[in-house]
Every structure is written in C-alpha cells, then in structure tokens.
Image (cartoon, rainbow, N blue to C red; front, side, top):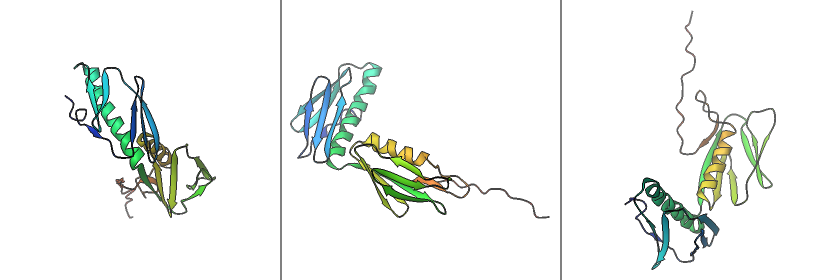
Length: 179
C-alpha cells in the first residue's frame, strides 16, 4: 500500500466534492477545481473523508494511487486556503510594476518585458517582491517558473529573478594576478 495513497483526505466545512465516473470536482470558498479520474484507481467519499484505493498491485496502478491522492489533497487545500509563491528581483535598475492583468518588468534589457497572467492567477507586487497566488498548485508553480525564466539569477553577482527561499551559489569570478 502506498504511504501517501492510503491516507484519507479530510473534507473541511464549506467544501463540496462531486465524484463522477469521469471527473472529480472540488468546490470551496475560493473557487472550483476539477480533475479527471485515472484508470485503476477508485475514489470514494466516506463519512467526511475522501478515500483513494487501487484495484490491484500492478506497478502502474501503484504509481497512480499516490498521485491521485496528492492531486485531490492539493485541490482541497487550494479551494480552502490557496497557494502562493514569492519571487525576488535583485539587480541595479531591475523593477516590476503591475500593468493591467499582468506585470511590467524592467530587467536590464533594451525593452520592458510585459508578462500576461493567466486567468485564475493573481500577482501582488511589493517593492522588488512578486507574490503569485491562485487555487491551482500546478498553475501557480508554472507561472512562477515562467516569470523566473525571464531573467534567471546569475552566479557572479546574483542579479536576476529568484524564488524567495532559493539559495544562489556564488562564484568568485576571475582572480587575476597582480604584476
């Protein structure tokens, strides 16, 4: 039995879960998420808990067991609390400002970079910190990764966009000999 897959998911108050043969829909105070069901895995709602079981012990079904439980847990967590990622911008003259439904970033290029945020994702800007929030964990992480990819942090001065908990390993640079 999967250690992750066998854990029940508690359904908080205010969250409704609809289990259909094809999809599972989770609705809560922050929004609604849906996920398709996987073959070989069954999902049931028993006394306020979601139980995920698999039909047999084939390796592909064992892999799907823990994955399905983790996806459902993230959906329940997302519609109740939401998810967020923080990004920091480091560098002289590097700036970020909200622009309509997106962000306007000045990253040392000859032009400003306009980043359009997808629906369901919001970004708050405070000085040189961007906080990406949303109810879908995968989408929040993807958007944060796309913003970071605009100007990855470099190892010599640490300039660029990095996650707030990321540690950039610094290099010493050239060590020229004095003559």
